[in-house]
Length: 213
Image 1: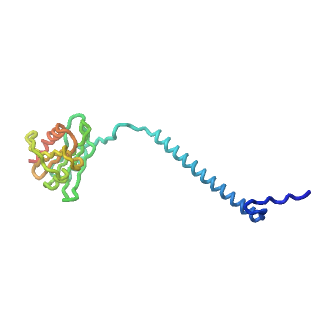
Image 2 (image 1 turned 90 degrees about the vertical axis):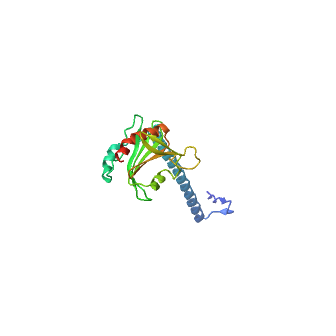
Image 3 (image 1 turned 180 degrees about the vertical axis):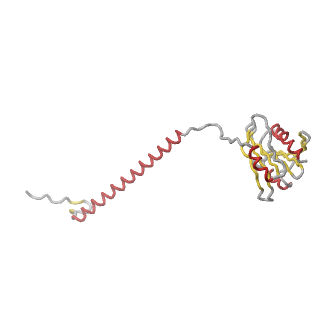
């Protein structure tokens, strides 16, 4: 029986040599492995995305903002060691909550201040600074260096008002502010709260202010 001649390869115009056949098969095998590796990478990526999606869907979430309820009195008791003056701990009505309380030291002039941040019943921010041995420059820094717009007396205490709510300037949280001095201490109220909420905090500060006069 006659042996069938090897097929003619169109690209070569003749039959392949054994070496060319081996090289072609090796090349085809390499391409197959490369395609298989690419498919595996795609499958792995899809699987990873699916796992991430499951985790995201499985984690419970709430539409309510996460708020910390800080015990201002407890923090003030620990911080009192740095000051001979009593640090202000406010007695506020229901609906108020504190989300920060700490001593802060100014990088500009080294003044130490007792700070407490509050969330008001109207979900606004109101920060209370008690600058120890403070000066007007420090107070101006807390108020974004805005100018006074008036004065108001609350419970016999004179407060200087900084109303920037109609200003187009970028003043951060200093949309509204109030300052009062007592001895070497300057009290600064600053935030986005309503006039009534600022007045509530000012009244709560009266015992501390009077005690330092």
